[in-house]
Amino acid sequence: MSLPDGVERRTFDGHERLATRGQPVYGEPTDGPWRLWDAGRSKLGAMLELDMDVELDGDDGVLYLGAASGTTVSHVADFAGPTYAVEFAPRPTRDLVEVAEDRPNLFPLLKDARKPETYAHVVESGLDAVVQDVATRGQARVAARNRQFLHDDGRLLAAIKARSEDVTADPDDVFEDVLATLRDAYEVLETARLDRYHDDHLAVVARPRTTD
Image (tube, rainbow, N blue to C red; front, side, top):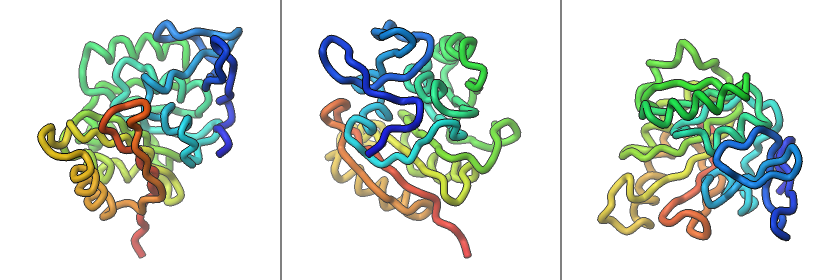
């Protein structure tokens, strides 16, 4: 699959790796203006490394749920358009605010992704993508509640964490249950296990179901 505009493969330590143009954030290696996008620290980066068809493009409007201290969302903001970054915990949000200082298109929001009504007045509608990486039970419900921000042809790019749903259950059973709930609001286009980079995670590409 082709990479989004603004994402390239560059050589780091003799290996071709993903990279974006921007200020370094987490001590990652650089090659001139390019910075390594470490798939081992980024679920979305892992999806790109696995050639999933995420359909991201340069200048897309993105809502990122579970931004933490800004590792992945900083790369997204390097190539995307307006990028809204929702994080629930105050400590990583402080780091996220620092990351945003070098990226005028990145908007940090100290909010709970389970309660989109608390930031609906800030986040524009008709976005191209919702990227979801939240460590909470009810991940499918989070995706459904944030569907309102996507246009009909937008994409949900979610990393489902089995242990966040049920630490005792078999991950395959957890993923089946999450996908069953997710299908109430989305059409699932592609899934892939991320175990090569992240244990017990399922990557999901989906688009909103439309109501007639």
